[in-house]
Image (cartoon, rainbow, N blue to C red; front, side, top):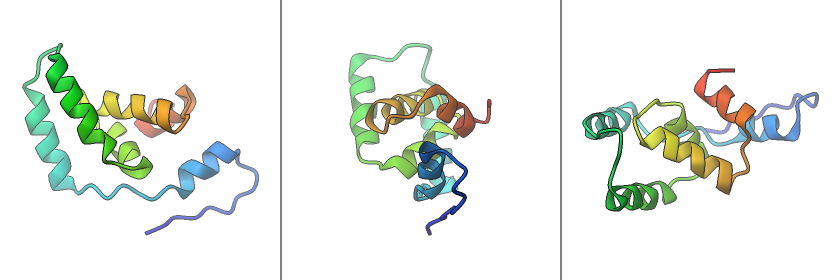
Length: 101
């Protein structure tokens, strides 16, 4: 369910990330997304991009964090963009999610 971290030495953003509801997307759903986007090329049509945006609009912060860290072609990068614009995540936050920090 909820993971609450009471460490007061962390910044507000780090506390927010730790307190966010963990993603509720199952491993099977992630694998289905991986399979469906594995065959897309380096570019997608505007229609596909708009469809992906509408699809990701349905998810909250926890699910977007999970998708961003899942390394799924197109989906993860779009999730990162939504986290940055909708939830004010910064590059450092994204790097922690993606394990590149």
